[in-house]
Length: 312
View 1 (tube, rainbow, N blue to C red):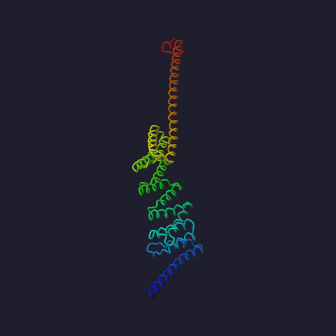
View 2 (cartoon, rainbow, N blue to C red):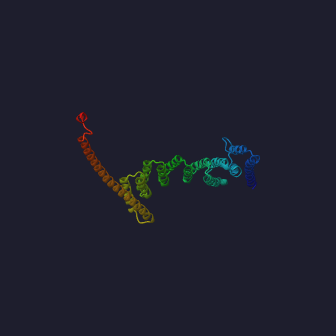
View 3 (cartoon, helix red, strand yellow):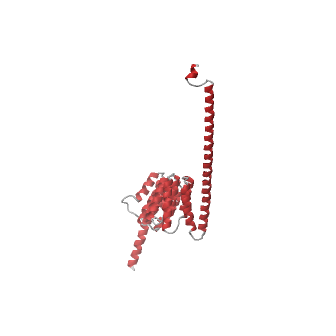
């Protein structure tokens, strides 16, 4: 009984000490902000995760809350992101609400386009929770919204390497390749998706359709577009009836009509060019005859000619 009581006293003392640490860091940051000393507040937060500093889950969570509640702005977001990354790295559970705060901060930095804090937090979440790809997709979104397409491309490549069966990242990667004008790279990605679909007996209709449209609308390679379209139609028609099958069948048939129209337009332009070339050739020949006859007449009149005309 005495031992149990002593244990309870120790636990209570530990909890009280932890709460004191909680109150200490918050009071320190609050005091610094009250005297308008933002640098001191940031230094206090940085000290919580400084190299060699003792780690306390309660103190770290309290510091993250203080960074968000009292400091705020990009500086507060960045400190909270660093503290939470350090805390979750040691214990990835939601103990003391660390993960919940991180998820709330994730929504805030994405909403506010706070790239430094987003990079800090999302990179850490990617490492700590590698099985959950949502953080990688979030980071790619931050980069894309900020116009950093190369950085977004790098994240999609990371996702593709981490999860080879993840098609969403590869599709996004192909679209980025299209946007930057590297159509061959985009087609390579689509070919990879198509091959993966065949290997897993789950045809990728979207990849087939995207490939055909790139060849038709951007590369203007009609024979290749026709081959891609035919392959896609074969893949769609080989699947059992379903809503998805009918939807993609409609999309393929619409693209096929577009291809038919483009082929007809090219045939018409070729015929027009052929007729125009013939007319131009006949016109040129007529002018040569006219000019040749005129030159003969002028020579007969002695206006132009050789030495004999000049001597007379």
